[in-house]
Amino acid sequence: MNRQNLMRNSLVAVGLLLGTLNVHAASPTLDKIKSTSTVTMGVRESSIPMSYTTGDSRFDGYHVEICRMILADIKDKLGVNTLRINYQPVTSQNRVPLVQNGTVDIECGTTTNNVARAKDVGFANTLYVEEVRIAVKANSGITSISQLAGKKVATTTGTTSVQLLRKHEKANGVNFEEVYGKDHADSFLLLESGRADAFVMDGSILAGNIANSKNPKDYKIVGEVLSTEPIAIMVRKDDPEFKAAVNDAIAKIVKNGNMPKLWNKWFLSPIPPKNIVVGLELSPATKNAWANLNDKPAEDYNKK
Image (tube, rainbow, N blue to C red; front, side):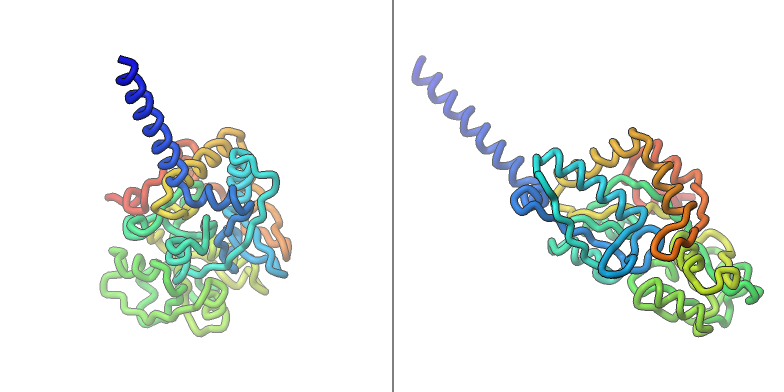
């Protein structure tokens, strides 16, 4: 009997040890943060006001600040005294690979959560729901998709905006030429310089670039909403424990009533470095995302 008990206890002990090792191995990201006291945040350089540079290799924005709050919560949970954040600029083309290969631990930019990307990466619960629109010069006379026939339409390499435009029912028979910018600032420059007649992109990015331009009144956002998309913080797909820690922190941020304050700060108030006001009102879709936290992909938002 004693021998059986001993064997049983030994098996239980081994099981507990293996369970501990499995939990420990389940989150390489949390492991790394705890052992090195550092984390790498993927950021954008020109996605005003979501994620952008304010100069001198400094970054800020709505998603960047939220990610700092998330990482502060994780730091406390891990018992890390200080946490150094390394900011890694990413582009539309390389953001997914850099998360996949571990260069970036948490991507805090303007990435749409969709089914295709979810095969390669994980997405945290959505705190911003975007509407894809069209920006044009105010004197262009363009007010709808149908008027883009024969025009040059700019978008940023690695984004899905032009694909969405082509799929829109009102784009049937509308032929336009695609021109690409390497980032959002470059795409807006194509519109600003007259090398493009329209710029198709997330409404917040269009509004941010217009507000940051020399003469904001020279531009306007027009046309039909091409798509409604959840913009979410991106993490590695093979690290569910880290994603859970991120979502726990997001739930705290929402519960503490911080989201309306963050919205007012980044979308309705002067922001650095030029004290521009983006002027984008809180949408019902984003407000609903705060009230019902989830990681649903864009396809769920656009079901007809």
